[in-house]
Image: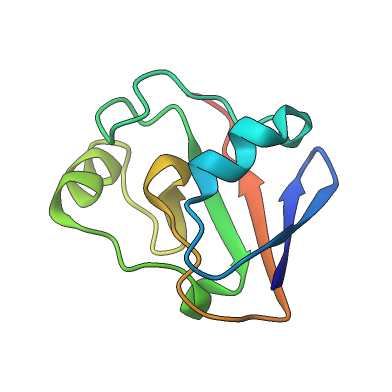
Length: 99
């Protein structure tokens, strides 16, 4: 298990390795991660990874293209594409304000 903290909602959720974070936030709407397309095409669910990047899946081309359109910072990812791939003490994600 890993503890995933969603900011600014300050919601911490225990997540099993192998879990898709979109599924986690569906079960925990209090995390307040916005979604629109849910398929790496709109950029609504951008989050800044503050801790635990190494525990998350690597970005694929479709995600990278969307992030590039928003000026792709190294630590910003699409929550709809994130998967917890290995144990981590803590992952901290901060929702990026829509521009």
